[in-house]
Image (cartoon, rainbow, N blue to C red):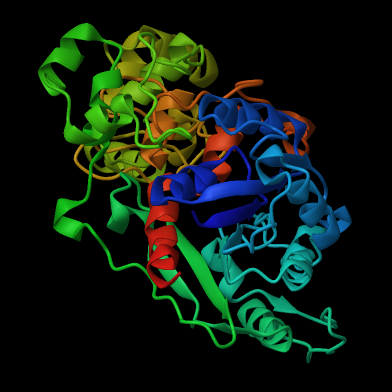
Length: 439
C-alpha cells in the first residue's frame, strides 16, 4: 500500500481524495484546533485511529520537523517490530490568503513564506513524490530579499514558482512545469482553478498531470449537485424528481474505510442548517435572476425598471429612506427612473452578491458565502450544499462553529471556512491516481 503525508491538511479534502485513490495517510498536520476536531472525527469514521495506524499533529509548520514526523510514524502500532516504510507522497497546500487575487494581496503576509517551510520538511523527509496546491495568485507573487533553505539569495522580484522549483532542485527533486487545473474538469460541480506543482526525487519516474475526465459541455451543474437539498418541497419535486448520479454517489459515499467499505450518509443529512434571513434581505435576494450579479441587477433596474409591488419590506424601507409614499416608490422603480443612490437603498451598495445558475457549475466556493444566493430560493447556502459543490461525501461531518465574524475570522476556522479552504476531494483523487501510476 502506498503511504502519504498530508501537511496543511485542513478539514481533510485532500486526504479524502488520497484515500479514494488508494493511499494510506500515516501523518497529517494543521495549525487549527477547529480543523483538528473535524479531521480526526472523519478519520475515526474511516478506521484511521490516532496512534494505531495514523497520526494527526496540531502544529505550526515552522515548528514541525522531519524528525517529528518520522518519530510519530515509527510509534504507530501497525509498525511495531516492523521496518518503517518510505513516504511515497507528501502533499500540502500552504496557506494562500497572501497570494489570493480574490482578496487583498499582501507581499508581506507572513503566510507567504510557508511554502519555504514545506520545502524544508520535504528535504527532511525525502518522500518519493511531492505535490503542492495553491491559488492561481501563487504563480505571479514576487518576493524581495528571499533566502532559501540552502542559502541561495534570490534576486528581488523573483516569482514563487521560480523560487520553489529552484529550491526543490537544490534538495534533489525534479519538477514538472506548474499547471493550473480546473476542478470542474475532474467531476467537481464547481469552477475552481488551482495551481498544482508536482515533483519527484531525481532518478525516479516522472508523473503526469491528470487528463480531464469531463468536457466543458458535460460539466456537472449546481442542480446535479444540490437539487435534492432544495428546502421547498414543491420546488424540489419539480426541479429534482429523481436523484442525479452525483447525488447518489454523495449519499452512498466515495471514500472507503480501512476495510474498503464506503460510508453512506446517515438518514438525516448533516450540516444542513440555514442562516436566518430578515424579510428585507429575503426580498432583495428574490429580485435576482439566476446567474445575475448585483452590478447586473442594478443595470437592469436602471435600464428596464423592476416591479417591487409585492415586496412589502423593501417598499417600507425605501419609503422611510427616500421620503416617498408607497405608490411613489413602486412607480419610481417600475418605470426605471431610480437613480444610482436610490437603487443603493433598495439593494445596498454591495456589488459582489450573485445568484447562482442551476444549469452551471458552482462558482468557486469561498469561506464566507454570505453573498451567494440559491437559484431556487431567496437564501444563502448551507454548509452541506457548499460541501457538495466541493465533492465531499454526505457522511463527512463538519464540526465546530458553523460560521464566525469580525476579527475572529483571522484565527477561527468554522465549518464554512473548513469547506471553502479545502482541496476538492475529486481533484485530489485525480492527482493522486497519477502518482499511483508511477509508483
